[in-house]
Length: 335
Image (cartoon, rainbow, N blue to C red; front, top):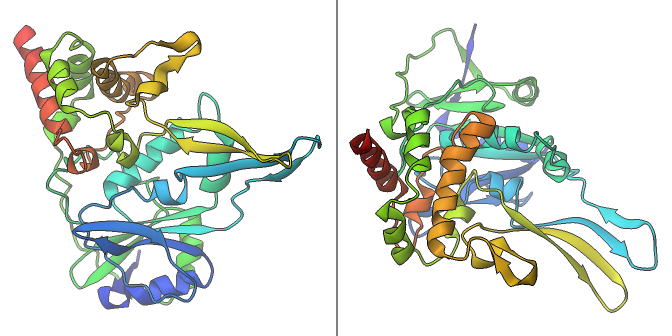
């Protein structure tokens, strides 16, 4: 089969052609050394940054699960909804790295069962995912990739002076069929990505976290952690949210979905001012337990793709990989 090649010098032309048909979200802005995904204006000449090592927020938290989302509007005196969020525009998430592609595939499964998250899918079904090769961030630790199939609609594979375009879905094939590209019969060979051993043995990691509730690690982390929730907000696989109703003096209002975090003190607060995870130690352990114990049990995969954002952006300097290595070592010493 012929391979499609795109010269790296023509990536901006590709994005401009996509802008004619879609709303495009891409890594185009730098804040210091950090890259930011944002929605391109229709008139804007894209200045892409595809060599970034880490974005501040994963692209799915810009284009699919934003920090604020109106679910519907209402009027107190009317039995009918004024509006309902439908996600009508088609969006291209351009330049998504492999750890975020993997997270998005896992997030799709989470949002599909056991109960389908309708607001998520109303947006997700209209999103085209374009991945890209990238230099790994020093704090990232590569997870095992089950298979590239199903991770993207299109993928820009770095083969030197060109990107080889891999087609991952009919949706991606339709998008790229309208764009003239150079073809070649040769397919450059690329070695498999390096896998960090800490994420390779899911069962061992699961046991290490599950049996660590009495570990001194959690006391030490509770001393360091300030409970800000940044690690959860930058994580591509954290999806906790709160729902609130807002109403004005005219009796018009809206129901909104906003980000929340299990590391915040009020997250587990219920009626009569009871909090079943009062201490920061409990909340910190619960975050690890959900990612490395509950999610493997419920879905068969970890709630972590090794992107390294939680370590890179933690104001207290907490490193998740170091913690996992220590927990595995403690498990091995017990057994």
